[in-house]
Image (cartoon, rainbow, N blue to C red; front, side, top):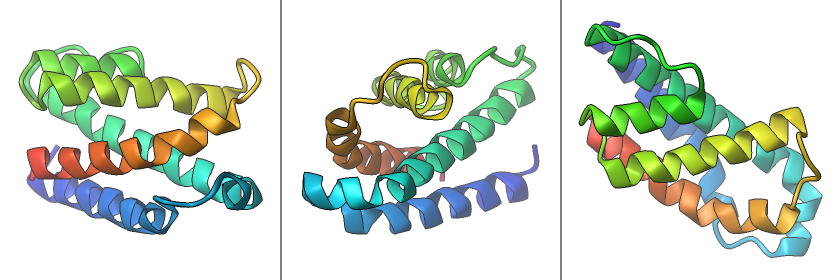
Amino acid sequence: MSPDVIRKKLVSITAYLNDLLPYKDISFDEFMKRHYEIERLLELLVITASDTTFHLISARGEPVPASYRAAFLRAGEMGIISEELSKSLALGAGLRNILVHEYEEIDYRLVHKSIPTAIKDFTALIKELS
């Protein structure tokens, strides 16, 4: 993947992150009124970030991981991002799967509490990949 494509993906992550920032301190009641919008932002952040890591892993001649979670963990193992960040992003990928695929009942309190962590993690990702 060319550096220009990586930059474009980082611009997209930054845009989604900026859209999520106003919800950092949202009350649970207000969150529930806007949860579909917030869920979509979280999903877009995970998808775009994992797509970026898939390409960075592949560019190093490694096989593409089978899942978003595996991509984040492998990126940490390879030193593309820090291992601490890779583990936290892998947890976010799990949350994304629950939201999108509805594998189980969604715990909206957990999603609400995940907003500050997502902001911290995706901000760190942008810094580490820039």
